[in-house]
Amino acid sequence: MRVTSIVGARPQFIKAAPLLRELAKSHTSTLVHTGQHYDPAMSAVFFDELELPAPDHHLGVGSGRHGAQTAAMLERIDPVLADGRPDWVVVFGDTNSTLAGALAASKRCVKLAHVEAGLRSFDRRMPEEINRVIADHLADVRLCPSGAAADNLAREGVHSGVYVVGDLMAESLMSTIGRARAASSVLERFGVREGQFLLLTMHRAGSADDPATVARVVDAAAAGGEPVVFPVHPRTRRVLDGAAPSNVHVVEPVGYLDMLQLQSTARLVLTDSGGVQKEAYWLGTPCVTLRDETEWTETVAAGWNCLVGTDRPRIEEAIRSFRPSSPRPEVDDAMHVARRIVDILERDGASLS
Image (tube, rainbow, N blue to C red; front, top):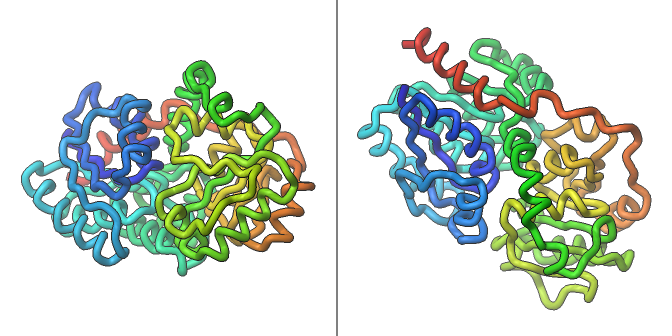
């Protein structure tokens, strides 16, 4: 079986790592990196720490407006598929790399598997929502992280090729957290203590492109006087206006091991990232989400995540008072997710031929 996996951003590197290791045991695996995340701190360090193989194809697309970026990816993925003639294309999550890979596979009539299928924020203003809906409806196999994601697909009339397999990000995290705790010195480097700082991340277009919103969130995070560690995404740094409050440590993006260590030792995580929300949940750290909706509704229902948007009083109140309302349910099916996916590709590949 020949499988081409298409990645382009940090969350996709994390999801791809266990699947690529499993595929390499008995199948021909090709890795395509679109170059959507190209800064060394956003890409190369993740390949090193996750022990990912070097990409077979690096398309070098880089950043840009959604239409231009997606078109460039589609144009460059197409000849890779034409030459490689894979049995499957696998795409991950909800980025423009996901959309371009799904479109390229469908136009080449190559079977498509979508990892993290069925997630919905129900906000069509988010580019990520459009990307994942299209990928789900083009896919031959939809690999859902949870029963709730499969239920979303059923409500859209999608019933065939739907499998609840668990979450590859959980498999990556559970297999790596021990190494992160042993190897990372990030707390010492930033001068913070376990349980005595806040971790802030912010990168989504709806908030991170607006200087006033970024400033409001940073000021809200700093208002209580606790140390705040703020690894700044390149798109956010472009609009970060002036000096941050003295208790906010504005730092460059950190690698996977350091990020796991920060998330597992923070008192509270503040984020607009889907991946960080669920990693915080798995690590047992309460999360305040800087959005009015989330695709990870299970974390809210469990009482370990609250939605506050970017309103300063709501953020400050959550920092002061938000505490989990119940014990955290255990992570289901966190291991062997990659093996389940490969089994499905083997079985469905034969039946769809």
